[in-house]
Length: 135
Image (cartoon, rainbow, N blue to C red; front, side, top):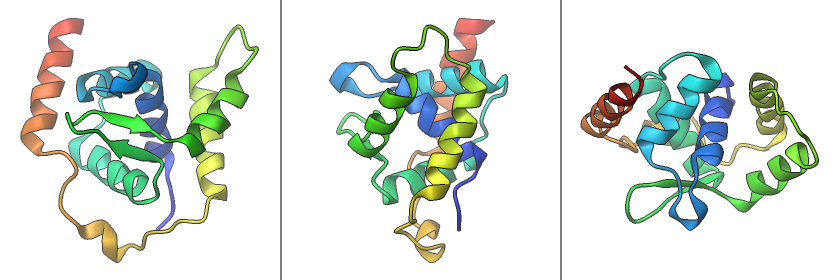
């Protein structure tokens, strides 16, 4: 199984939602994803992307449930955006998809059928919290 647009979209959303060493809260990841793609990511799509990104060590789950991008991605994206006064966010997602395509996947399709990374309840709560902010 290969990476897809949603995987790049979520990885970018995690990175840009991180708060120092605290990682990114789910509500902020959903918000950033909506900001960049003008769409609310669906639960299944989000969970599938998180599984792949976690299994390939591109993100880590912190003890409090927040998510954080890892060094491999951070090095690449920092080089990509350094010295830029403007960032075209959709283009950056596309570039991230190319970055992911060049990586050798370490997990298999079979291992992706593991448990959910986040629960449907956690997703719905974060989505409700986000929608309260924007409505």
